Image (cartoon, rainbow, N blue to C red):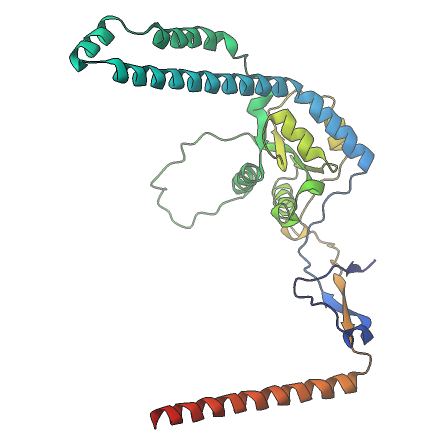
Length: 327
């Protein structure tokens, strides 16, 4: 078993001084958290192949979102042009009108044709302009927050609840059950900081341990996948997204994803008769130590004594100043 080594710097690290360069590198062994779930190991070529299949599945949705985005921008431009023209007409009318009552009567009798034309054209174009939404849109869960909420919902439904009270709940559950997540894809290489997605393997393993017959597959995607998927979905970022279990058009993607190992939490699975003992996880922390420990200790004690002496002198000076001020 290879030890896990952390060699990155810390936020508290200060620039090295001349005397600090004399320190030697040492490794300190510390106990790591035993309740940890590792990300599944997926080769890069497999990740690229899975990403290509996902892009082909999202092709119709990409076209649909692009058309909607273009129409939205067009409507905003038309609304801005109409608003500018309306303000211009209002300004000209106020500048040239000599009688407010006659202007109001003229406006009611002869309404400007520009007000009705855009409304009528948009009302006739809107039903035909929007293409039908692709079916895949109903089976997508996009975003870290949405995926986390769905996973927590599934874990809660998979647990066996024990009711202590004999009285029935006052508020019945009337919400419709949501389809469960089947495949979860995470742009792990593009997420910074990675702590934003560190909880996803634990949630997936918790659900798989509670319901091993229908596990969730967690798939990390290669670097650059977030930008590619964001263009397909017409959003700014896509750190994580999932397909639910009701998605049927996965004949080309399913064989690739099913070959990836399923995550489980061994401490949540019922203990069998011959349960293996989980080995202790020990990690190595790379740090530094003085070459001459005795000299470093004496220097540290001298520095503390000097600092203590300076504090006493400062307090004595403040007391003397206050006494002179009272006199």
